[in-house]
Every structure is written in C-alpha cells, then in structure tokens.
Image (cartoon, rainbow, N blue to C red; front, side, top):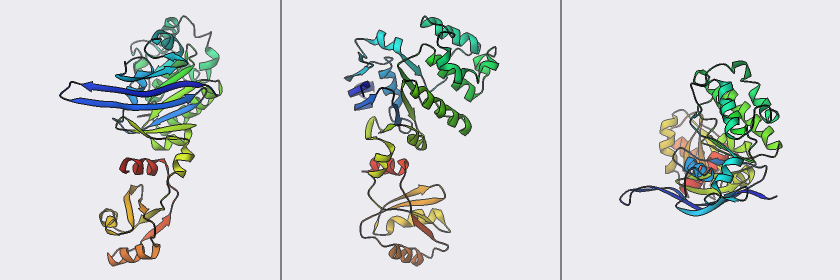
Length: 306
C-alpha cells in the first residue's frame, strides 16, 4: 500500500535558550492509506505538537514530513485543502447553531453539506434533530460529533483527531470508534491520538509515545507479543502494604497497581511457590495470584522503565 503520512526525524522545541522544552524529539513513522493509526501516550507526551505539525499549524524545528505526498512546509496550502483536523479542545463557533457551523465550514472549502452528505450522514443524523441549537449548548458527545462532521465536510483524504474521546462518556466513546471504522472503509486515512491505553486495540497500528519520543510502534498484537517476561496478577488483604513489600522479593523485576490486582513482572528462574512463601512470611492472608496476558499498558510501562 502507498504511504499517506510520512514523518522523518521531526523535532519541535519551545521556550528560550535558557529553558528549552523538547516537545518532539526526532520522531519518524509512516502511515499507509486507509489505515487507522493511533498515537498512544499520556498528557505531555508531545501528541498535540506532533499533530499540529502534520496539520501545518506549527513549523517543525527539524526534520521533515509529508501528507498525501505534499511537503508540510513547502506545500502547506495544498495539505490544508485535503486534511481534516479535530483539535482536542472544542474549537467550533459556540454562538453559531449546529447547522450554521456545518454551512460555514462547507463554504470555506467551496462545497456544501448536500454535496458530501453521504460521508457525514451516519454522524450528522445523530445531531440533526438539534441543528437549530447553538454549539455551546450541546453535550460533550454531541459537540464531538459536530466537530467530526465539520472536519469531514470537505471529504478529506487524511483525518487528524487529537484526543477526540477525552472527557466523553463510555457509550459515546464506543460510538465514536465505530464511526471511525466506517470512515476507514471509505478510504480515509485516520490518525488519532489518545491517552487511553485500551483504545490501542481498536487501531490497525499504534505508536507508543512518551516525552516527545516514540517508544515502540506496530500492530497492538505485535507490541503485546514483544513483552517476553512472565506477568503475574497478585491480590491480598492489605494491597497498599503489598505494593511496598513486593519489590523486596529477589525474583521480581517490577510491580505496579493494576485495577483490583497488582501486576508483577517476574525475572527468569522465579517459582510461584517461592513467591507464596515470601508473602506468607510477610503475614499476608487471602493471597490470590495467577499468570495474566500483558496488555498495551503493561508494555508501555516496561518500555518507559527500560
């Protein structure tokens, strides 16, 4: 397949010589056409700076990139006509109605709602009953759907979505990802950033990002399969004390809270019997432990520490 987005050693710095913040540090990756590609990372990882560079809203301080074959610096005008960008913060005109916002963005791109209605229909029909309501009066989920409709109204080839599901309820999150899958089927390349590790499995490929760098990239399954250590979920009576005591066991490489259990990364040569004896010696009762399959979050934590 051909490449829709290519980044080569991108860099972005903020601040002055005395206090420089390296927001993007030599990032390189490729996204194929009609691929759903996720940039996964916590707040402050550099995701928004990266997206703003690719959407031609920021100039890079180093490296280069292309979107749909156009250079992000030399051909920025061409890129702006063929990408859709949905920022993390709701940025539509809150004093305009739903319908007025749609018509405004369609006019900017010399098109109309009717011309591209087939592309946005599945999304727009959910907010159409409120088309006379001002955007600022919509719920979070409805604002999200309106912003996506406006980003799609000119039928872009590449769609950049910066943390579109942050602060949205679980039902709206699920609906949103279902919409993205349908858009992908129509040949649109989608780059989406999110701090939610569980959303990684919904992407074709992902890049795990932290402190302006990509720690790992590939399919979610490939990243999980790269986790070679044995992972054990442990639960006992006093979970706080347990978390503090676990590092003292010599065959534990790492341990951290994970839901109702603590996840424990074991070194080679460990035995479950030895771990149980260690916990008994520490006077723990009602101990539960079992081997678990690692998830993206486990992989991310290990990549950060390695």
